[in-house]
Length: 123
Image (cartoon, rainbow, N blue to C red; front, side, top):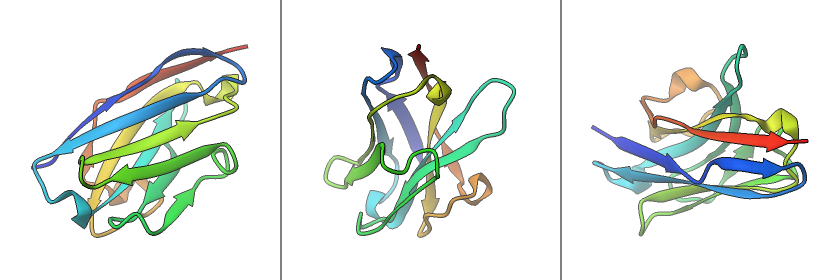
């Protein structure tokens, strides 16, 4: 069983930055691809970014390219999402997800999910 706990969400003004963290436990962290998804009210869950187990490859959704950076620290069992130049449309609950030996862009590929952290960007 894998447990994921997100933190770092909050209220920020447009143009500001936030850094989300996801702490993982219960598995060999480096075996798992990790990703961030988000879901705004009334919308489907959206892929934000993913990173391979070694951290050697990263993938981004269109909304995140050029503004967000995903990273991981396998020694700390943690994955991060640095979000810069935030926009009101980035407002959503952000979820951390883990998938054994994969790092895809579809939510259905991921077996483990955190409880989510709210990000609100004011205009």
